[in-house]
Amino acid sequence: MTARVINRGGVPLLIGRSADKLNALAKEHGNAPILVADCAAPDSLAEAFKGADVDMAQLKAYAYCAGSITLKPVRRASLSDFREAFDLNALSAIEVLKAIEKPIKKNKGSCVLFSTIAVQQGLPNHAVVSAAKGAVEGMTRALAAEYALSGVRFNAVAPSLSRSAMAAGMLEKEAIATALAKAHPLGRLGEPDDLAALADFLLSEDASWITGQVVGVDGGRFAVA
Image (cartoon, rainbow, N blue to C red):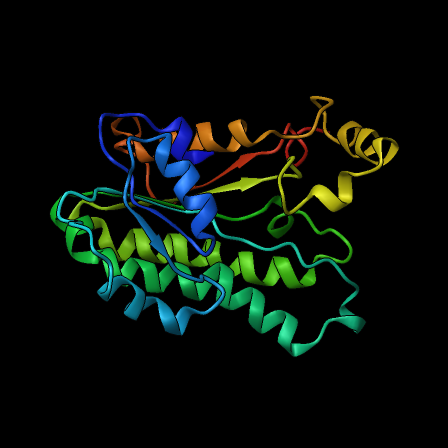
C-alpha cells in the first residue's frame, strides 16, 4: 500500500518474497523493477541485491514494511520465535540499508521503518513482537544520529491494530473486530492507507526537518484516555 500511495514522479523498486504479488504491483507502476528476496533470511539479502538487474543510482527513499505479529504468552514463546522476529523486523532492515547505502547517502534520502504501539504500551502476549519492534525504534534513533551529517533522515511509524494480511486471522469474527475497534478512541481500526499516508509524509520533503522520530498512527489509543 505504501508503494500505491507514494507518487512523486519516480519509479519504485519493489522488494518481496512473492514474485507473483510483486509483478502484479509492478504493473500498477509502469512495470516497475522488482527484486525477489526473503526478508525472513537476512543473510541472503546482500547476495540478492548483488544479483539485481536494476540501476539504483537514483534511489532516494527507503520504506521497510516487512513485519510479523507473533502473539503468545511468554511461557510459550521459544527462543526461535524471538530470533525469527528479530531477524525479520530488525536485522533484515539493516541488511537492506547496507545494500542501498551508497545511493541513499548520495541523494540525501529518507528512510522509514515500521514499529508498533505495543512497544510503548504494554499489551499481554506481545513480548515477541514488542522485543523485535523495540529494537526497530532504537535503531531508528541510532541511525538518525549516525546518518544526520550525510543528510539522510530516519523515522518510524508505530501503528495500532490495522486491517492487514497479518491481522486477518484476528479480525475474522465481526464481533471481535468491533470490540477491538472500540478500544480506540476514534472508534475504528486502522486501514492500510492510514499507515501508508504517514510513511509517505515522512519520506517526503515536507518532512525535511524531521528525523529520529517514532510517530504513532493508532486512532488515539496510546495518548488519549
